[in-house]
Image (cartoon, rainbow, N blue to C red):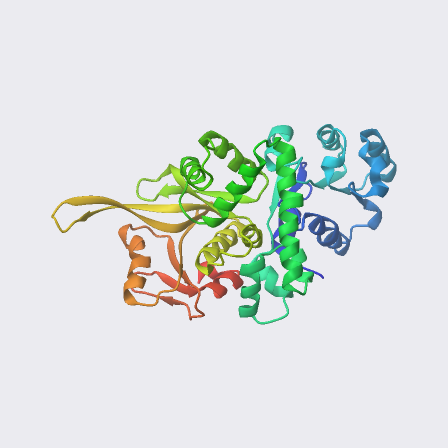
Length: 417
């Protein structure tokens, strides 16, 4: 199955010949190897690069085991690079290479080499790039399939695609499976035998049962404000045993580093500052979130919010939770401070969008409730309300745009409508 991933392919093309190691990171099974060895290699060939100037090695393959030795690999590359022309070196699962950091640093000195690598979460993370390459590594973060990428190969209507997507998520392998049983088993097994195994091995987790309960709590509370203290209290009430706040904070960081979850912090729009706690967690893939809960909590409202968050990240935005502080007069005549919430403040350079994931606005009161935070501050950035219903895009007298969710997800320029 050929799945085009134009955003990521363009990111690799934008970084060509920049003198840095291009490192493709992201959740395991999200398509890193496919991007590098299928899409990028094909693009190089289509642009006229000779096949003998593309050197690719999948280091996790048994037949390539000898190349995990740094000296053998460097000797092999020297033999392949027979002239002064530019060579494109593609290394998959580079963490399998012994002392891979020193090897990649050496490759930086090859004037006619452009180097691209992928690595697994268990031993190679975005934090490693910052630490080990000190500005000489250029990260390309890949996510599971967006809804538009998913729909491009899905056989059925967009509403049918939505039902599948919000249940089973966007890991590419899901699209090759025909039965619900296959998809459920795949996601459950992948969670336990790959992701959790990686996290436990890398971080030497001792409280394995507690880690499982924490994952359940985070899945159940998707899109809800929380923090380690609140999670610790909830854990105590559910399990009857203490689980320290500091340990929970550390475990949550492990999950973030493994790309399983993402944290969105609160931003005071009027005060123009961040609020440390509480914050929200979203799963990188909603199929994995649902699998963690055995597909019991299929609340489309919260899943929709998670998918909107992921879509904004996929489009290259940093995403915060918006907070609007107000003072309101109460029936007793006293003024009371309140905080209104905007689901997402999406930023990229000078661009900013305020987005509410409303699911439905079934009455004038509900519509007023969703738009209320937008009316309590005044700036020039676009304000958007998303609803699950398939409606025509409309703009009210205050400039607030309301659009259907699927139009938002499927139109590349939907934020500009």
